[in-house]
Image 1 (cartoon, rainbow, N blue to C red):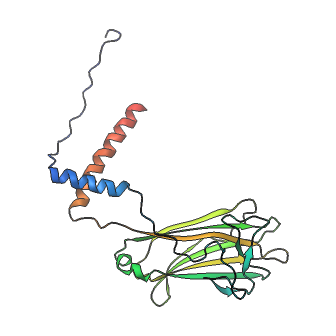
Image 2: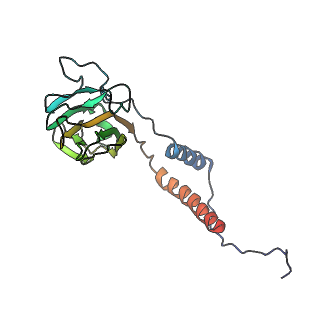
Image 3: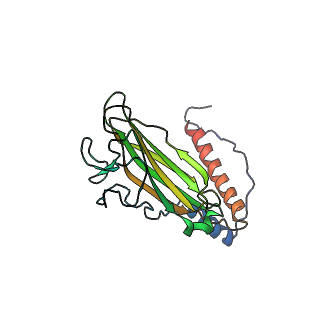
Length: 235
């Protein structure tokens, strides 16, 4: 074949689908929902960065479960968010808890359509061995029995604030979510497992319209097929 001559390529033929106007509009609607950014509610956690002034020596919005010295700290290291962060004090171990009422989402929770996103930051004082921070998130039923527990394990990051994040659809029957901060002392006199910027957000997932799920699958399947073939040609 002469140099520069065009080469004919025979591509396989795929069956054509006759799209009706209603099908097009419904597919575009669901593609928009699929790729849209989820609408998050405001932070459900009260006083998530320990910025509120102590009341009678206690942190507003939180309950001391273990330890009696939880308070605020602002330096060495500096806070991740705002001015202050959660500091246990001098107890060998300490647990601080906030239970968030999510019963207002009961309807969508029991349809498995309510997703919750948790985020928090932990850090420890630089020493060897270092004290640790641990975050536990529990989904609780109406009787406060745990349905699901997510746990960060003990973390001892002495150089930077480290994010702990969980994202999960609430189990059916969830009516509250407990956020538990645990600091354990391994060295010195202070319990230097720190916490900051604790947040819990939620978004409601859409209800698939009957008959639309299959249509969406066909549309996405075709899109993925085109992307795969383009990738092969580029490679």
